[in-house]
Amino acid sequence: MLLTVCIVVFLVLFALRDILLRTNSFFYQVFCILLVSALPVVGFLLYLLIRPSRTIAERSFERKMYQYIARSEEHHG
Image (tube, rainbow, N blue to C red):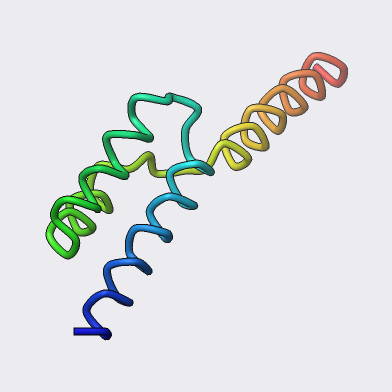
């Protein structure tokens, strides 16, 4: 019983941390947390399928790299 509770708490906390790093949408964050809370194992697997593929930081870095490359090509081209 205690092990089950620990696993559920871990899954919810993992999903909470992960979704906060992946989106700024409050409703999407709440939906994902409720999904994992209501259906711990199945909800977590569903969460892994529907979560954004990259974090906010990764998207920002990618956007900055594309801008840098575009400026570089304009400068050298």
